[in-house]
Image 1 (cartoon, rainbow, N blue to C red):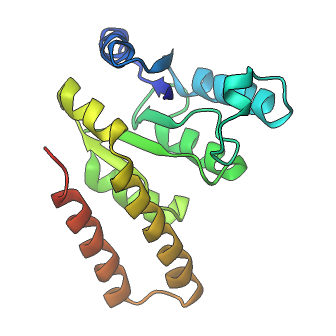
Image 2 (cartoon, one colour; image 1 turned 90 degrees about the horizontal axis):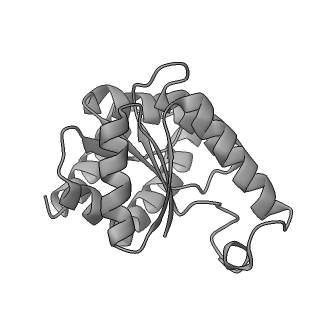
Length: 179
């Protein structure tokens, strides 16, 4: 997998990179939101307009330049949430995993402002948990289904019961996790 990570703590970012590369993933590290957006847009533009490597062009993942983005929720300059908003505005199919010590706040923001459900990992987590989450495509497929449901709920002006149903479904997905 081609993975982009935005993590402002350099030692943690290096730890992520080494562990994921040991699993044969290609990892790009950025240390703040501004750098992450620049890297994403540069690679996205290359993939979209055919200047990327043949390996990138042959992927059939809706022109996503990275299979996964791991974003620290709170970073200097531009935080992970703002990065996600901008990326999803140009590529609504991009898979995003937030790494956050503030899971409740991150979940609420993702539903209210992104109008999309994203994956969340509560800090601190182990490297094994990070790898399991990134390599777990089943959970992402389930989240994509929820995003379709979110569109339906939004169009019908959600009631409290509908929102609670959505959150209950998210909890069930979380229980399927291996950690």
